Length: 390
Image (cartoon, rainbow, N blue to C red; front, side, top):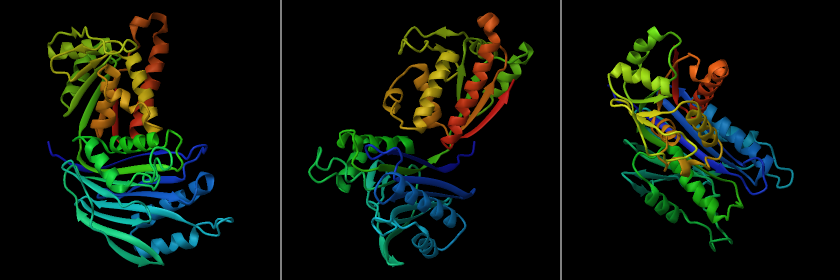
C-alpha cells in the first residue's frame, strides 16, 4: 500500500470568562489537493467585537492566499476592510498563517501573536524568522521543509498571559510553553490532542476563569491511516459473506460493532468469539475477542457513547483526558477514529435487530441515525469518510 502524507490540523479555544463568543478564530482551507492553509486570528479585546475582527481576518486571509494573492495585498485589504472600533478608534487583529504545499514546504507569516514553534523528533525547536515591515506592520516570516511527524504549534496571546496575577506573577513565557509541550508530547499524538494539552494547561493556570481568549492550533505532518467499521448485519443473510469479505479485504484497522455483527465476522474468518471478562467501564458493555479483528464491541450503547465523545471533541474536548486513557469499547473506538485514523470506511448493515422484537424498527432507525451522526462528526473533524449500506 502506498503511504501518503497529509497536513493534519487541530485546534481548541477557551473563551474569556463571561463571554459567549471567542475573540479568536481559526480557519482551514484547501485550495487544491496539494496545498493547505491554516490561519489563527486574535481580535482586539473579547466578545462580539473581537469575534467579528478575528473571523473577518481569518476568512479574508485564508481565501485570498488560497487564490494566490500576494501577501502584501492581503495585508492591505485586511487593514482597509476591518471595521473600526468606536471606542478605541482602531481596527486590530493579530494573526498567524501556516501554508503547506504537499512537497511539505512550510511558509509561516506571524503578526503580533506569540511566535509559532516546531516539535520535531519529540524536541521543541525555535524557528528562524525574518522580520519585514509591510503596510506599517512588522511581520515575522519563515520558510522550511517539513519532515514526517513535524508539529507546528501556533497560539494566541491568551497562552502567554495564562495565570498572570492568579497562579503566576508574569504569565507563562514562551520558553516555558515550549518546555511544557516537549514534556507532554508523545509520538503519534494528533494535532487536536496537542492543542488540547496546551489549552487545558492554560485554563488551569487561569483558575478555570480565563482572563483572555486562549487558542492553540497545530499542524502536524503525518501518514494517512485507514480504519474500517462494520456496524450491523445486512438485511439479507445471504449477503453476510459478501459484506464481511469486502470489509476484511480493506487495508487498515478493523472494528466490529454489535453482537450479531460479530457473529457474521467470526463466521467469515472461521474463528470463535471469546468473551472478554474484563469490564473496564460498568456503563459500557464488555468487549469480545475474535482472532483477526482489531476491536470487537457491543453495538448501540457503545456507539451512542462514541457519538457523545465525538460531539464533545468538536466542542470543548473536555472528555479527551477521560476516553483517551481508558480501555473500554467506546473509548478505544474513539481513540481509533478520532486520534489515529484519517480515512474511515463504514460497512453498515441495515437489518433490524431481532433481539428488540417489536421494537426492532425503532432500534433500526436509531442505529441509522447514530451512524449518520457519527459520520457527520468525523467529517467535521476533517476525516475522509465513506459508507456502504447492506
